[in-house]
Length: 114
Image (cartoon, rainbow, N blue to C red):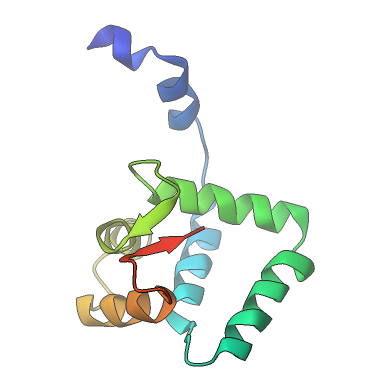
């Protein structure tokens, strides 16, 4: 067990610092996202790829990686719920998180790809 804890990947991941205010903002943005129309989705994709600065993109990537506890490159409902609990505490209703998750999971895969 001690040897596993000394593995370079474990050491690297444990030293990542996360801006909790940015994490709260990112999770809040997920809650406000609604995928009712394809045009809206395309607009959000454009904004995310074109209008965010490099440092903003990097910070969002760190936040998603922090929430993605199994490191598979996508967020499950459980990981998102745990992320809300970690960064917001108990003040988010489970039903609200599920509703937000289902809105963002546009392909119905059960995951949010990032």
